Length: 254
Image 1: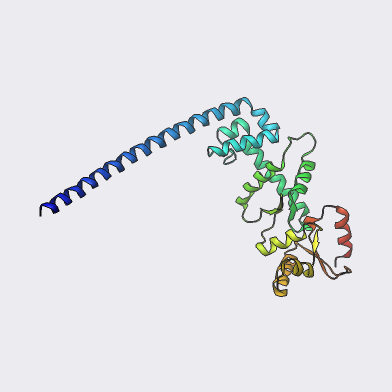
Image 2: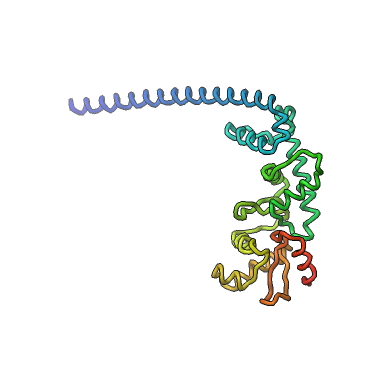
């Protein structure tokens, strides 16, 4: 009985010590959180001062603007989150990206009848720069990517598909899965592919190939050339870098 009493007392003591350690740990965690919050607030203040001094560089220099955006991201600040507030009033970056988004939509809509709603980022960048004119503020591909991400509020009509080291911009609400993306990546080099090429490269069953190519054709993302010497070819206007190739395809397409 005596040993039982000692054992019970030891357990109670250990629980009391654990409770104290837990309480101490909670206090330390709260102190650390408070210190981190204070440091972030200080950094945020310095970032605002930096932005005030270098606002012209942020507005006019795309590379500098990208580095500034990355700095903001490290502390959870999104200058594009709203058209109001300090960042919009001081830098105008919120309005800048919303206006750029409108220009992106205009370019995509103007070319949708030709490319089915798919366009390489490089091509979109070139056409947006042309539409803005020589005297307009310069924009980079990074600016376009940030503006496109903001366009997602319009629904699933705008998105980006990874294509090697670049992106394919989608401006139509088509549901593209991994099979569709894989075929697009296969066709990237030449701008077209065929059922035979897909079968040889991916080892897919004919039903799977037909399902994917038929969908891309139906959605207007691909054009079918029945007069190719090696059999039917599926052309993707978004992947054709030269207008001449598009003109030739227009002549041969039904």
